Length: 351
Image 1: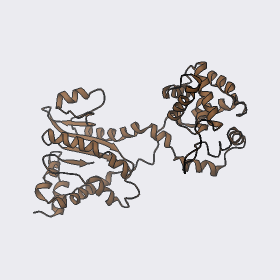
Image 2 (image 1 turned 180 degrees about the vertical axis):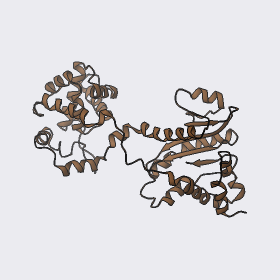
Image 3 (image 1 turned 30 degrees about the horizontal axis):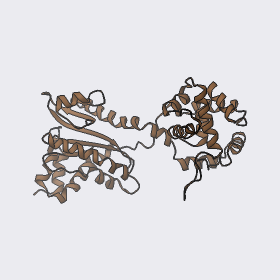
Image 4 (image 1 turned 90 degrees about the vertical axis):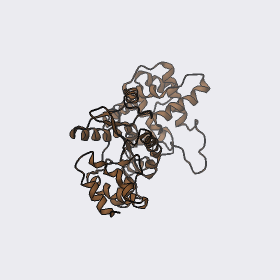
């Protein structure tokens, strides 16, 4: 039986895509106790040198940039005379005239768009009015879409009840209200104070720490960040002349009919040869810590079962993201990431 170092060198030395299938020979050459160590060492030599963190960057969206918010804030401050005229009728009239000010008013409450929309539902029931949908809140804040008097009214009523502490009741146990923050601790009074005197830098930084820097834009851009991985894989395939299809909602039926891949949704990439035969499946996943990485396991398990059903088509898992603070070294991370079942007839790999 060959030593681990010999098998690793045998795999790493592969010159072509077909030869890289030497990974599939690991079960024949080694006992199961050695599989993880081999996978980890292959990952350390072939993949880890090319890894780079993506947590240093944040997507750029006009809606989340300062100019868009500043414009909404300035209009809200002007329409309410520095947040002095904040009665329901006044707010409703201002929102109907300039719907984009809802962005500033909603952020003052500390709620997300979805949370605010759901809050309008709580208010609407007692007033026999229709609540605002998440899409309506979004369109008002982004582009100031025409807003009816009743829509402006329900938005104003919701803001008023939130700011006066009448909507949600007392928080349970060790929880606290989202309005229990420096600028809204005493309702509109502290809003006016902070608007006039500006927010102390320490408070500004604390709120960033408390809420998570760039949290909203990162959550909104999860699909875009996922595309970063798929774009990189696609570029590598093109560079090396590998024939592939990048899947999406538009071609699910084609993948099923052409390659008999029945799992839904189809893997992010299918690789095929000149005879139109399926050669490999690749799935990209973005993970942020050990917990979210484990959450992706069911998807990979389903794909692995599909690869076995198809006769052992190689399954490649391309996972990106931080392994979390519990992983203290790069070798620890690569070991955890690269550990994959490789018993025949299918292979699982991590790139």
